[in-house]
Length: 193
Image (cartoon, rainbow, N blue to C red; front, side):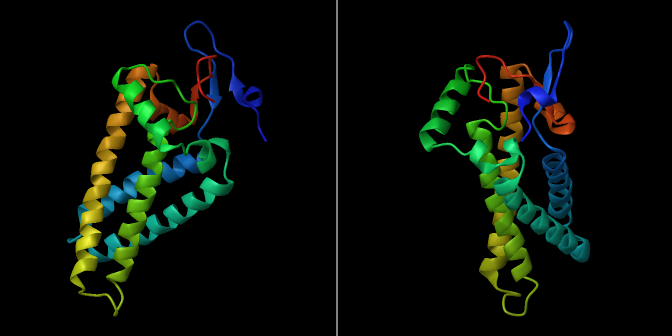
């Protein structure tokens, strides 16, 4: 297992030391899901076959992320970012006051968002598949749930983006860049590793 010491890069006066947090598989999963969800959302009724193919790839990505959440790198594992509801509520209260602690991996709200997005996108994938089968094709509630889940996911994405903007501002750290490079500012004594 890697330690912070083995993956830390020294900083200087203009750029602080960094540490690798997001492994390449997490980053490829994240950006692939972003692109494929956007494509699938925008092509739902117009391009049936490409929409379905995107849905199958998304389902595969979700399955991969669940497995990687159990056996993956330190900050990819669910055990590193699933918190009690009281911890999430306390973190959100602190965020509203712009006094939330910095987390090296997902913060409590971010961890909850990961689980919520995985769950909603899994429902989208399942109902999308169901609509391609003889048993469920044309069943109204399946199509309604598929569409409602897609819009729920879009709402969660908007909340996620808002959270990333607030946390980036509050912590003085570009979280979008961190999800591209995999690196974040090295932890300080006040940070939660």
